[in-house]
Image 1 (cartoon, rainbow, N blue to C red):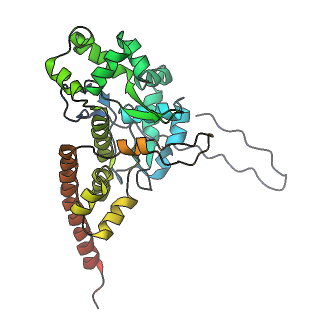
Image 2 (tube, rainbow, N blue to C red):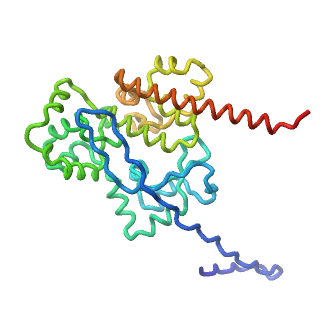
Image 3 (cartoon, one colour):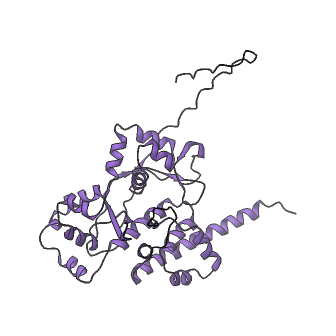
Length: 326
């Protein structure tokens, strides 16, 4: 390590020695993570297997000084904010919990690992590339109508969505997953669609919203390092009447509301301002749309609440045991 030059000082004061910078920690380990399981569909897309970075739980040997903010990490990796978020959601960048609920930070060791790969910025940008329906159809060399049928039938799972200037929903798909789908199911790119998929399309089924909700809630539940955070994930997609039925205690409902995770992108005003505005079309995507899906998330919420209440009781017993006796 090169020594820093000693700045000029007044003659009456001796120069202070330069302290060497602390060495960086060794590379953070990585392991394969279980792929995202999409919601049930007529022909659900099979998840792409990949090696992803480990999500480290809170308190697992990572003081705040060894981590950087997501904004800083994106800058050091040469990525834009949307590219960085997509890379995190796809598991290419490992994150650790921050001080606030749902705050994500990146360990310095993780940055060192990623930056140690030649051409890391371009590689991450390509791995996290998202395309809309038009670009996806061009990538698969099929018509946009065929792409829309495959997406509505549950064969293609979106990673996120955006709202355009007309407040219309624009679904976005990982380009790498589309290429993998084309290699795995080439018969679906041309010719007659399977009967089950054609029947689902005749019923006007659209599996894009429920499969996106399944993917997003699975990712958020994996990031949650607290049982109440995990419960808040499942509560966030339930309608009000179902949440009140599952959680009759107003205090618990308020707690879940305060821990509500960031599910999707809020709408922005047409004049380019930064304050989110009501967007009924987008809000509808954040809530379950059928009785089977509602029952599934309600059961998951009830299961998570059992663990959360047990954790509260254990914490209360520990505090009581630590109180000094009179």
